[in-house]
Image 1: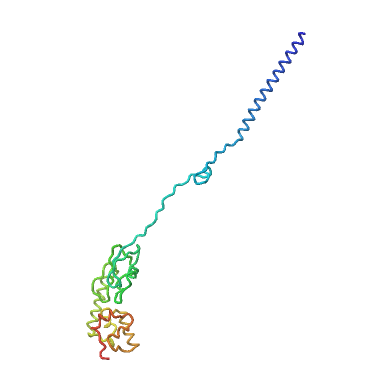
Image 2: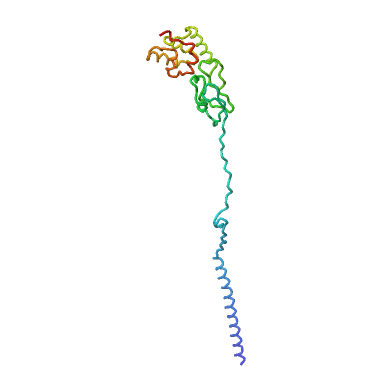
Length: 232
């Protein structure tokens, strides 16, 4: 009886140890498996809908709109007088040239002496530009690109020619140099008068000079008392 009791006690103890080992193994196995399962889980942030209907989680920060600077054109105000059709004050873009201002003013008159102005010059704000008349002896404003020596030479040449020509000038026989001494008649118009009378014959009356290209009633009114046809 004593041996059986000892054996039974040993078996019971062994069984208890085995059961305890199984329980411990199951507990440790479940924890390890749980850790592995948790390591494979990815946490995804919730997507929050933005106010404009888009997904805030899918877009980056929105850059603030920067104000756009708009270039405002700057106009110049210039005053043009003299031999233009419509003298006055005109607003033109910056960098405008005198030729365009003359065009805005209706263009030059028939007696405008454009050779004495620099039409390619840039105009300046608040500038006063005066287009001189042909044969005018008054001073030319600064900025027109005319040297004083050139103006003096032209005046001296005309004075010398005038002293050698008879007055009134016979437009049927006068040379181009003598015709050029008349107010409003420059070198180009003088040559045109000579060419016209060579092609069409002598002028019948002084007002016949208006048939020459470039000579209108305005110029004729200035020279009517200074020309003659010599009875031809």
